[in-house]
Length: 372
Ligand code: 5AD
Ligand code: SF4
Ligand code: FES
Image 1 (cartoon, rainbow, N blue to C red):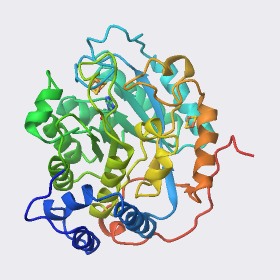
Image 2 (image 1 turned 60 degrees about the vertical axis):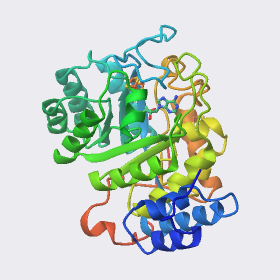
Image 3 (image 1 turned 90 degrees about the vertical axis):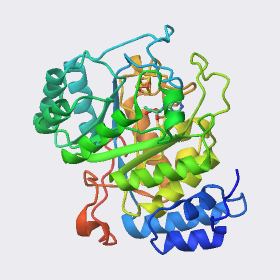
């Protein structure tokens, strides 16, 4: 990792970030490259900003991985089309609806519908799923299903979807091309802009530790996410999967990812930043570490146990033998252990004046029903 002439010292970079300077390479790169001695200070400052700006509440998003079919061949992903070792499944509309009802019963306020890029879920089928969940629950609905055309995203918005996640993965054109044999960076960017224009609460994110990725590239990712108006940003370490072309790659680390989480909190003080499952996979306490370095969201899995092991984006993914209740109480316990509370509200993104305001404190805390 090398710094440029123009880059600031760690101290000056941290001061710039805390002064609210919009993201620019000269402060992003030194913070992303901070030494093991300096990094704890970065995490502490990000944790303080998180506490001041979005409070101690953690928003829980119940994740349904409803199909592991994927038409794409991203070279890092275990679900890629050409991986013949995946036991493919699709959940029926009824099963998805039932799982969403279970999420609400457990106390969740948001459901995330996630899948590979699976054309079986057409515009109309997805609309039907969204409408049913909307009609029968009070939960916010987040989609995470990859790239679609404008009219499809619009139909789903009209059906009642509130949020949509499309990770950009990397904004470096050469790296994006190397990782995505059948995808186009400009097309991906266009989808993200459409989502914003359609009024979705906009989620994106990147992977850390991709082969050939540099801190400068990550810094430019942060700048792009800022320009495009990302409101929820999920980042996780790249974990090489044995059944993919990148099986021999080195992969990302918890420490690199924590630096990025902290940098994101400083650049986007009001944003929703998840402590991702990939962090929990590399380190049993990885998610708690992220929550103490700027993150304020967790995404417990509520996929039926029978399907979980088949959704191996990367190897050794956690929670593949646990059921929805187990994950709910596990997450509650983990939050309690670090003195954090579970949000009672749906956790919509903050916009306008709400971005400036420190949170007004202490609505009654929601407990997941599985707790005593
Ligand atoms: N390691 C870590 N994260 C991965 N993803 C896909 N493959 C991997 C991997 N091998 C992430 C991508 C994708 C999300 C669903 O999972 O960022 O957007
Ligand atoms: Fe499919 Fe998404 Fe995996 Fe790419 S990252 S292969 S689009 S599931
Ligand atoms: Fe699933 Fe801990 S979050 S078992």
